[in-house]
Every structure is written in structure tokens, then in C-alpha cells.
Image 1 (cartoon, rainbow, N blue to C red):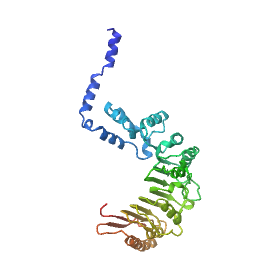
Image 2: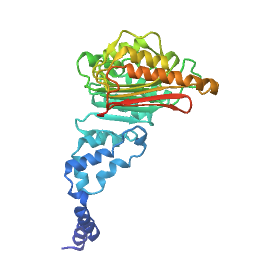
Image 3: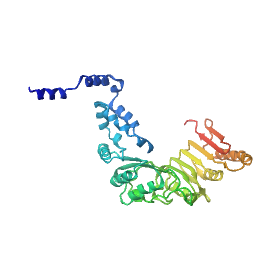
Image 4: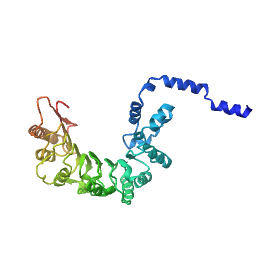
Amino acid sequence: MSSNETTSAKDAAPSQEILTRRAFNAAAPIAQLPPELLAEIFLLRVPKTAAQMRDISWFKVSHVCRTWRETALAFPAFWATPITRSRPLTKMMVARAGATPLVLRSDESPRRASAFLRTYPTRIGAIDVEEQQLMIKYILDRSGMVRAAAPHLRAVKIVKRYPCPGDDNGIGTWLEADLLCRAEVLAQGGAPLRTRLHLECCAFPWQSAWYSQLAHLHLQRLSGAYSLSLEELFSILLRSRNLETLALIDVGLHGPPGAPLVLTQLRALRLRAPHTSCTQLMTQLTLPAIARLDIEVPGNPDSDADADSRDVLPQQSALLVTCLQHPRILGAQDRLNVDVVDKWDIVASWSRGDE
């Protein structure tokens, strides 16, 4: 054997350090876990919010050892949240995700996020975007230029971080009404069940198909021209009769309510609104499956402190009466708590005793 062949053989052979490390890893308790359980642990490392995508170290668990790498490579869901800031990394992760619906989480690199939506619309399962107004408009408007449907899209979360300076119409941003051909997807029966929609400081127009067939709806920080009439709200609820959770937080509500409505599947309701709006909603809605109710009536910290404190008790009493009179609320084992927070806000929380 020549000296070159001897050198190559030595280089190819694992060093003693590598052999020792492999033996240590094989004896570690985590090495005894079934691959299925290890894969679920890896999945817990995947970012759950757009902000967490800034740290890309989570996917490096596939480089720790051979066993971990084989487990990660055999688990497509681990790769289904691609890192969009790097095009080669995006392509690699999309390929490894196989047929698993993809998750777009972005709070930076709007051009990459927009390109991702345009490239993989039929693969998208969830969108989570947290950006300033101009960046949100860039991502979604550019993506809307491609009239491609997203039949697997089951969750949308769009958060506008800051109000637009000089916006005299109130807090909010209108999004494209038929983003990713939602009406077409619904018409063809391709929308996933239990769709989740979470919008903060932005909204689709209230007649948009995006408010149909929802299981979870969260609207937050909408006022002025972006406020919601009670009639429009009830129209949305009629289009999502299987709604399971509803949150309306600092959403301008105005006008008379619609006709009384029964939401047979609603289990959790969260409201932060003036007392009159809360009362109108609670008296017009019948919620036979309700298990959790959180109501917050914001006070006015800019008003006279003494005068405001005199208004707290009547509002608190009225809120209690509203809760007590609602069907299915306050059984023998149920819990109701009403507090005054920071001298202005009244908070009522109720939950069923078996929850």
C-alpha cells in the first residue's frame, strides 16, 4: 500500500474522539426515545410566532448527531416552516417538507416573504406576518398579483405593528378582499375545516369571503373608518355558524345589533369594548356550548378620577347582571370573577366548573 493510500485510509477512519462521542450519545437517555417521540420534541423547537423566526438555530438539531439527523429528515413537518431570508435554505426546507402544508412566518425580509407566497401558493397552510403597514401591503399586494388559490390555507395571522402616522381615518389597514382567491376556494369546497383568522390593526373588507366558514376569529385594534357595525358583525357570525372562539379586542362597534343569533359551537368569547356594546352582544347571542367568557370594559384614564370612580360601581353591577342573565352561565360549580383594574377597567371572567 502506498503512503498516499495509507494517509487516505487514516483520514477516512473515524478518530478516537468521534468514536467516543458516538458511544456517549448512544448511551444518553434521549437516545433511547422512539424516533416518533424524538420527532415530536423536535417539532416543539419550530418557531410558533413570526418574531421567533429571527433565531434560526432551531433547525440545527438535525446536525447534532447521525440519529437526530435521520429522525429530522424522516419527519416532513419539521421542515414545513421555511426560513425565507435565505433562498437556498428555503428551497431545501420546502423539498424536505414533502407534501406537508407550509407555514410562512415573517417579521422581516418582506421581499422574500412576498416571493415565497408567489412561488408556493398551493402549498401554503398558514400565514403569520407581523410588519409595519407598508411592509404588509408590499407582501400581500405583490402576492395578490398572482391569481393563484391557496386551498390548504387554514390559518392567517396578520399584525400591523404600528398605526400609520397621520392616518385620520383611525387605526387600521384594509387588506385585499380576495387575497389568494379565497372566494374561489370556498366555492370549490377546498377550504380546510377549522380555519383560524387573527387580524390586528388591519382587516379584510367586512363582506370578504375570508370571514366565511371560520372556526376561530380574533379582531383587535380597529377604529374609525375600520370600525365594525354590529350588523356587519352578526353577518360575519352567520357566515361562520361553527365558530368555536371569538375575540373582539378594542374594536370599534357601532349601530344596532342584528337579529338574535344562536352560535351552537362557540366555546370561548373574549370582549374588550364599551359596556353598551358588551351588553348588546350578550343579550343578542345565545351560546349553548359556552365554556369560557372574558369581558373587559375599558374606562377612560383621561377623565376626572373622582367622577370616573363613581361610574365604576354601576357599570360593574350592570356587567354582573349581564353575565348572570345569560343562559348556561353560573352553574353550581362555575367560576365568575369581576375586578376593577387600574381604577378604570372592569374585567369579568367566567368559566365552567369542568373546564
